[in-house]
Length: 175
Image (cartoon, rainbow, N blue to C red):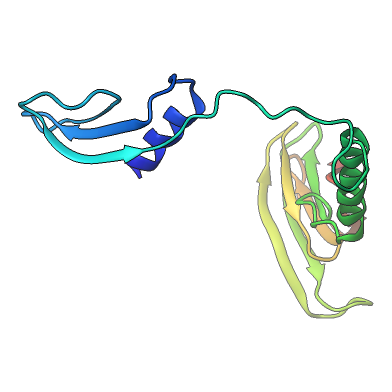
């Protein structure tokens, strides 16, 4: 791995017209790469031959296809854009998620969702617990609709059977 990285670094940088690269180990066990042969005290590991290209090929007005390079780039970018649009987009983490936010009081929240369309007794508990005044809690739903009940810290009454859309990170504020 070290050798590949070293050769790549030397290839990228302009190191002149050298055509040999020496890898050697010194008396302390340190590996070196250089254009110069190792000293008498060093142990040669490998000699690599390579060539360095210092001139960049000229970009012609047209290549063998007869299309100018600028037009080729535009065509390639257009094709990539079409491929991207044709692929289904990955599901965003917040696509079926929302926040429940406590308003002026601490609240205890119990959030669920129906696992079957049309509502049923099959419910999944998404989250239950306290939310402190002014704080919010991220709720991730698989269907984009939730039911929740809550109780404020100031009274004994439970407010239940509330429903809300839980999509795109919307915020549901509890008064």
